[in-house]
Amino acid sequence: MAPLLHLHRISSPLFSKSKLHTTLNQFPQKILNLSPTKKPTQTPQISSISTVSSTAHLDLAIPEETHLEIPLEKLFVPPEVDISDGFEALSARVLKGSNIVLSSYARDAQIKEAEFVKSSTKTEDCPSDGLPEFALVGRSNVGKSSLLNSMVRRKRLALTSKKPGKTQCINHFRINDSWYLVDLPGYGYAAAPQELRTDWAKFTKDYFLNRSSLVSVFLLIDASIPAKKIDLEYASWLGQNEIPMTLIFTKCDKRKKKKNGGKRPEENVEDFQHLIREHFQAVPPWIMTSSVTNQGRDQMLLHMAQLRNYWLKH
Ligand code: GDP
Picture 1: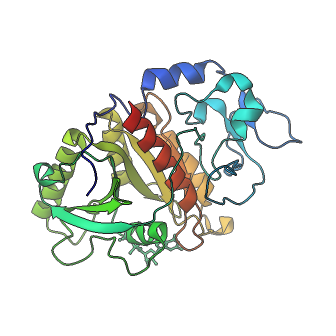
Picture 2: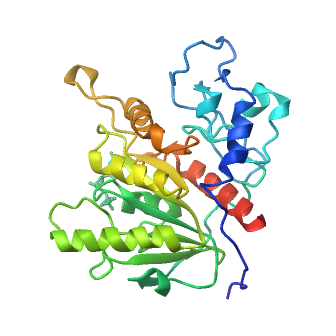
């Protein structure tokens, strides 16, 4: 049985936005350039969305990386990351395939145990032990079940709400007896009757607004297709309501042929962020993932760990 923790929620998305904003403004115009040979450019464009990882001290092996350029103002820099060491030090701490700088809070990232706890139809019925939690949500077919299973590395673990009777519920899974992964109903499922769809929206919004132990929503977006209106609306709503959000781009292994008019996943990733920018005071963290190649899995776990450990301490 996990010890009862007395926790409080941080006041605004992820970490304190004002703190984050101040941090970023200290180097307003500079570009992070993770390529040792390439000079910083003047145009703040993401030319290649992949980054380095320097997590040798952690127990997760992340492949060595190639190259990246992300403007500093588009990075997610957690509080208490010392930026006074300069760009080189900061750039070495950006998680591969994301805009997230790693902090010293990224400990105990691995999932060792996962168990289903309960399905709730109302926020009040959710577990009341105060353990920190992350809610995964996305359009039906975005790849949520596949991602959950890839995260726990156990294909047959019922880390999915697809079971009959659980599709309209808030499903809690306790991880390592110390935090929760929460599977929320998919939205935008055309075949669902309108009243059901409205109900889902109502109860998930209530959950987002009132769940005090929610550390961050992980909003899943399919990066193999252009941004969908419903996803943009969902992200904007979270931004407007200051609900902490991390964008998880799925299916990043799918490469569209340019000549057929399709965009590459990294282009869709950039477009999506551009379209929601006005609704956020600071850039949301984002990670590119694939359940086929397991890209982004370790990065998600490290990001969850650092958010969780920071949240527990404050
Ligand atoms: P859910 O409805 O959000 O739970 O989506 P599923 O996990 O059931 O996935 C929907 C479809 O997308 C299935 O056909 C999966 O095989 C496929 N899919 C899921 N994740 C990936 C991925 O990372 N890459 C590719 N290429 N296909 C994926």
